[in-house]
Image (tube, rainbow, N blue to C red; front, top):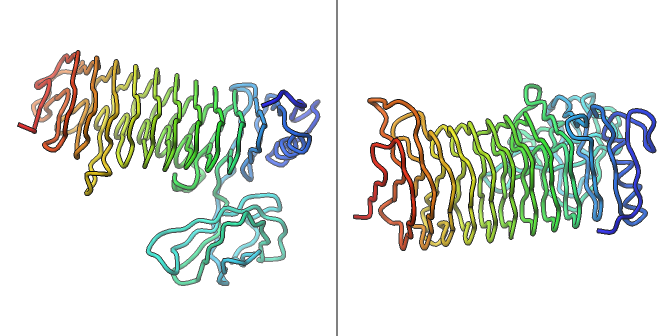
Length: 400
C-alpha cells in the first residue's frame, strides 16, 4: 500500500469532526476516493450505529486505548411484510429503532432450507415503518413464516472483499450487556470476509456478544499483537477456507474458545500467543484444518482442554499434518478428566514436539489429570521431547 493522503478524525480539531460511525466512514471513503492512504482516529469514544467499512489500500490507525469504538445497544422488530430477494426495502413493526446511515440486519429461517440466514445492510431512507436499504449484491428471501426480524446487530469494523488494508492501535467495545448474540460466521467485533493481505495489529476487541476477531474465506490475513477479551464466543476465529493466516503475539482472555480453527484453515502460523481463562478449549482444530503450525503459545486455565483435535464423521475431514511445538499448557479442565491435549477423530501425520503440559493444582479425587490423550483412530502420530508435570497419567494412548 502506498502512503497516500492522511486525514484525521476526532471529536474536535480534526479534518473530519464527529463522534460516531458517520464521521469515521466519511473519512475512510474520502481517502479511498483519492487512491488510498491513512485515516488517523484521534482519542475519544465514537458511538457506532453501523460498521466502519474498510476499503482497499486504507490504513486505519487509532490512539490505542484512548480510541474506543463503542457498539450501540441492539434492538429488534418483526417483519410485517415478506421481503423477496430483489427487495430494496424492508417493512417492520417498529421503524423507530433504525436511523439513516445505521445498520440493519435481517434474520430469519430460510423458506427453502432448515437454517438461519442473515442479510447485512445499511439504512438509506426511512418512511414510517418502511426501511430502505442499500444492496451489496447478496440476495435472500425472508418470509413471515417462519418469523423474520430486523435488528441493529452488526460488526463494529467490517471488511468485505478488501485488499491491502490495515487496522491498528484502537479499541472496540462490543457493549455485550446491551446486545444480543451474533453468529460468528456472519459477524464479530472485527469481521473480515473474502479479503486479502489485510493486517490487524494492536487492536483490542472486548465484550462483544459473539466473536472478538473473525475472518472468513480470506487469504494472507495477519493478526498481530491484538487483545481479544471477554467475548461470548471465539477470541480469534480463522473461519472457513482461510489460507495462510498468521496469528502472532496476541492475548486472548476469558472467551468461550481462545483460538478456534473453523473449516479448511490451511498453512497458518499461530505463534507466541497467550490464551487464558477460556471457558471451553484454549485452541480447537478440526474440519479440513491441515498443514498448520501452532508454536510457542501459552495456554492456561482452559475450562475443558488446552488443545482439542475435533472429531468428524468422515475421516477425510479431520485435521491432518499439523505441527504443535514448544507450547506451554497449564491447568486444563475443571470437571472429570482434565486433559491438556485431547486428540479425537482420525487425524494423521500430526507432530507433537517439545510441548510442556503442567498441572499446578492439588489433586482431586473426582478428577484425573492427563497430559495427552490419543484417540483410538489417530494415525502416524509423531511425539518427541514432550514434558509432563503434575499428571496422574502423562499419556493415555487408546490405540493399543
